Image (cartoon, rainbow, N blue to C red; front, side, top):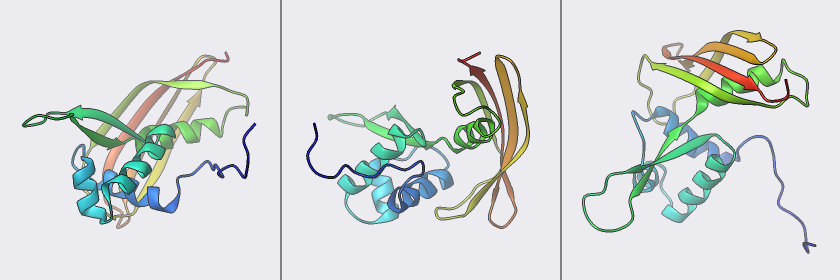
Length: 159
């Protein structure tokens, strides 16, 4: 039994984590903790804590990066906005108890965005099937520029 109040959990990242996610979304590729800290200011441990939340909640992923010398390999963090947005739109069309996983995700990068740019998703279509579901859409920068086309296939585990 835990003593004291439990931390509040929400379905959306906290404000500090959203700042990190915006920088990730505007990057041309994976970013290290050092690069994120430089872009955001603050302390690397604070950035790392926000990334841990984003990765645990499925908003970002990590991959080992090559290091020039000794020490542990750096982790590059890649925003998974396309997967989150497509899956979120699919989830709204399924019963609340439905369970599914991403089977395939294709993301075409069509333009660059800068750190701090506003991004908006547009879902063109969602097809709900008995076991397979599909969705497609786009991500636009706040000024209307098309920056990403996305398509995903999802397998229902409850079917």
